[in-house]
Image (tube, rainbow, N blue to C red; front, side, top):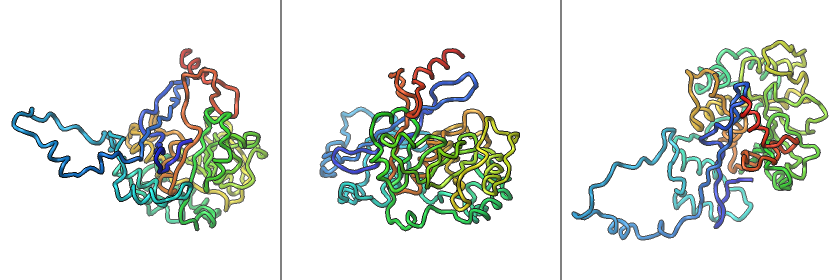
Length: 368
């Protein structure tokens, strides 16, 4: 499990940022590997040295060779290339004063701003009744925006009438969130209690909890999914959680309207596999994820092809990267667990809840 913490031996893990490609299935769907980037937070002693002395040591003399070409500080997306860079002394001092286990306000966004200066924190978690006013999503069609979906979204929101987290979570002055992936790296790690200790636990698609509490915890605050990924067996839903739609196509919003109004779901509505026909949630327990997070994850963080803002092959981010993007904007501390593939262990489980092995990815790829 990776988290944003300050301490002598702690570090900041940011998953999902660049190189996503892994293996291409015969169907043409690209499986993506989450890449972890490690940014230590301890401040080395040389940063505290006298700046005048440091400059004097580095001033060029007449015998020194001419300087070479300037080394770029940021990559083409705007991410800091030298990931050993630290927080400013002011911020490092501010967060170092927090005791172990105490939530640090604004910590995740402070770290993001260090390695990605273009990061702008304000971005609501869910769509609300003012969704038409948000320029960032107004001019893009799904999955990167809401263009053409006004009537469907308005109908859904008029029934749900709630656009935030729970009152208890909204009242927190500092919020700790964890995104739980479905990777087999969670198997037999006994992280359940640590996961449940977070204020907000986010799970993805149909990943089960019952029977796996020791490794993945039993708490679910948000379950983010889309029609084809939603749990289809009612008994597998947790008792208390918000059901959150990540809309990747216009049919997804139509499906959610059926669910909210308890109407019959048509199997011929353009889904690529069978979908849930019912979700055991009342309208006030249903949310629509802000599609800006899909847009930002794809184009700003991962650098997938823009394709004129239209969905196409190779420019759809994984749901996990979208969930992490959402958390970076809405949580003070963010942790991730269950992401990444260990291709060096072919007998390791692909997912924590099934017996399919890592070798299955290579087998599928070699048969194409």
